Length: 94
Image: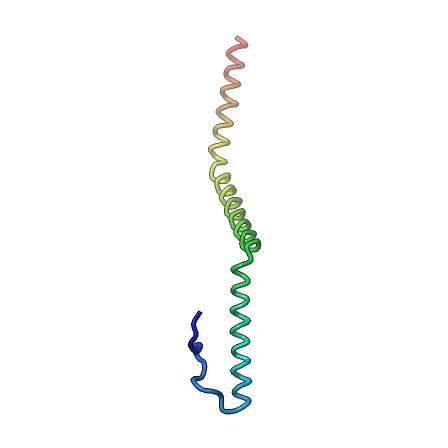
């Protein structure tokens, strides 16, 4: 933590009340944003949930692509198996 003035802060005290109110409003906004960022970083459950959802989407997408890519080879293997069984059955019938 630094002890010096924040970036953008005036070097001396403000000249009038309106300027002081404006500086207070800006400081509150910055503080609110900082608190929100810190809260998001410390919410482990939400971060884990987001990561799990992201990974599940990747796995589902990858499985769909793999299945689509392997359908022709699966069909060929199934056809070859049927032909082999049919040939074995016909050979035994003789």
